[in-house]
Length: 71
Image 1 (cartoon, rainbow, N blue to C red):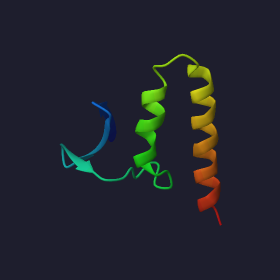
Image 2: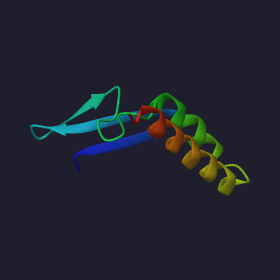
Image 3: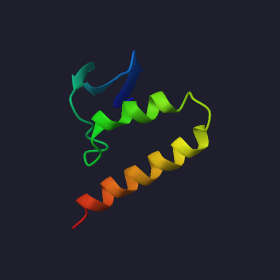
Image 4: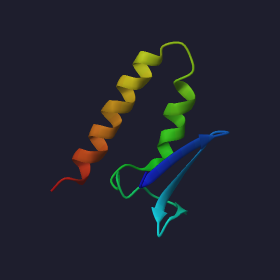
């Protein structure tokens, strides 16, 4: 896998495969326009009742992020 996301203890880490080893990054090359610091908030809410609403809110937020960066 060229990019791996790990979520543990409320923290999201991203690792990218480079020269056969995974290197931790502070951003995702795949989702460069999405501020990753906000994702743990959505992940922590996804385990509570009303998960469907959280998923919808997350999708809307990602779409906003991507549209804001489009020319």
